[in-house]
Image (cartoon, rainbow over the protein chains, first blue to last red):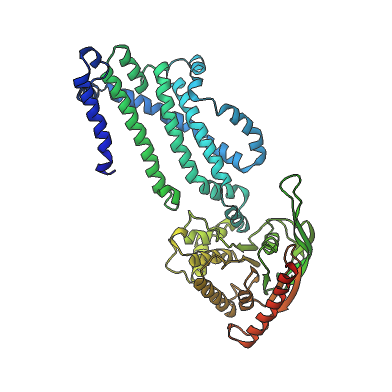
Length: 250
Length: 260
């Protein structure tokens, strides 16, 4: 990242500082504390360890839910490869897909109560569909001649799926994972706002009830930074693991 | 022994919409390819020559007629009939070595033997030193060499080539044709196979073939069959070459007249 590309960000923070310090009065300042107060709050939360506990719980939920959501990869391959499977599963997917993960929260709370399982279920829903749809698209986009080449070189159907179709679809599957983890992360925070006793979403909602806006902003910043780091990590891993893919190098 | 007999082959593709008419790609195509012969199928683009090759490989089934290899009908694709594709169809996630060894791996050839065969075939196409490269690190000509090595490595009975040099630039194309001619002239038992080449280049067909089948425009039918008895390696300057080229050009030209 170039230093030059940070000018606007710096200006926004400066504007925030000016508004908070010189425009707002003492009472309204409680609603928008200045940047230095937020940094101080972050330091406090970091020192007390509270921030790390919430971060750990959120990441753990995201990770566990993601592992469950990877089952969309074999589903997607089957749907992309066998027409009969797609014909049956597609209507179900089409009905469920437009329902936002957040709309599942009430039902999820009733089913699983408050806590990890509830949150993981919501993240799972957020991750599942992007990975599934990208896997299907990846499988359908495999060059037909690659499959033909493998066939005439004596590869069985199973070998073709494992050695050719899966590999050829991997760049798109990884794109699906990136999108899925992003959607999952957003869904996680929403699920934690209403249905958890820990996590970054819980942290900001809990701080709200006691009007600690500085903590709220720290929590929001942590959510943003972690989301960015996850996305960059997947991109980096994709470029490393698939050096042959032009898409991944971009 | 691996002679190919094509008799009365017809191929229609269903139309897409309900009002679309089915497309007749090949009509009553009959000819034979002798054992270890190099046969070229020559025709305009869209004459169904690639379709014919796909039928030979077993990727598609003829709508009527039969294709026999050694008297047995062609079934599902097998390593006994490998294909070199115009777009190379190399596995981009595999190195040159892994691409060439893929078919052997599928055949269950032991790793040690596989290594030897792979090395021999990479050397045959002149790609020694590039074993660890990925396809995207190679030029078009080199990719096609890998593809040829990959198709030969499994030791097929019939090698099918679909316009293998068409995507190359002019310089690379003539170099690859020459080299193919050299390999064929050397009568190396590894490459002396029954070969079928699909091409629209008259020069390429004469340069490489023992036997040329000229197809008509769609629907493809056999327009003429010619034997090429010129000594190898062949030169485009050879009077026999030029005479044959003129003859085929006239045959193909006829097609244009009919069409116009």
